[in-house]
Image 1 (cartoon, one colour):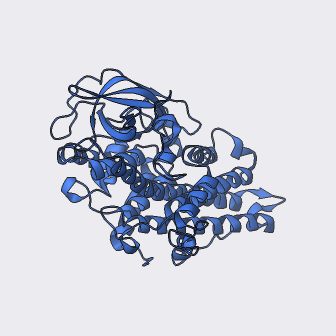
Image 2 (tube, one colour):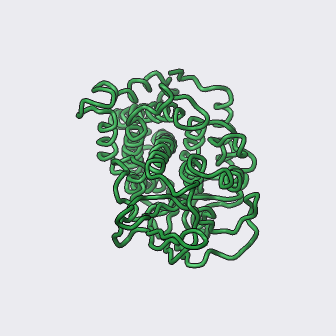
Image 3 (tube, one colour):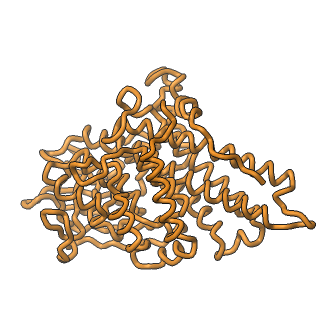
Length: 443
């Protein structure tokens, strides 16, 4: 593994960091989440149009930048540092990869260029809060997680002009604003039971993928949910005989859908791990700056050995999580369009393991940040609460951490004697150790 970033990758980070420092401070984040979309639409258009953020991992043939999961992860690290509320993860890490992997030529040409430039946003709709399961991050995704005929799922039935979807789903990332919905639904009844993916175009589009101001989809009700982490907007979707089209061609193959979701889970986990690392880095940086200024007993509290030890432990955790996230993104390049992982495939369990370590690190760093800021750290006005809420909600959405680690062990074959032998599970940590850590914490 070559741990050195290219000049282009460094430029992506620098440009994005400079823009977010100017446009996305803590006050800007708090103002953006209280708007109806839940994010700054003008800033999103600039990020998409000027930097091509949602199209980083898409091929140039479909209007993307032509990079890969590593570049997307680096961008997500910077958006995580700013706790940026945006549809980036839902669009670039969930919807677009599935359309690229399974979509027909027509579907790709209509939707991917608009998603790449930010003209449209997308998301993955999974019923029952089963997002981590659908992406094979906490267990195999070959079960009836999309409904299986039970209440609370989404059912699909064929119609004369396509398909009709009926059911509901909660905790849908950016579900209240996304114009392209990739919906996982149960089809085939009892005899041919299977989970397929369908496209629902919540905004009417022209052949080029642009919005034409048409009416909404009949039977689709979308409600933004109240979430602890307002920067990660979620919605509840109700579908009542909503017209949809099958993602892809033919009658749909369960094996292809399962494989595409698992591959998307690898890329999404790497991006989310990098985002958590960025948030943890920002929280630690702010805390270090605070303890240098806050005085107690006539001296800065950062001069006390107990505080220094706590910060040093956090720094070690952060660098380990960053190395694991980088390794997972590099490994995911074997499943995406712009990279080359080991043996052309993602390392088994690397993504789930990196995500678990990053989420745990963010939770620990955010908790310590609140404590070390003292009384002010508990106030609503202080930015420490943004990182703490992000840590809590991300683990609820994609965890828990122990299930992510169990899945990583299962994929690596640690306890079954298969899947690469007992030594492969530690590849994420061992291979990532070569990543050079940045400057040390100095308090």
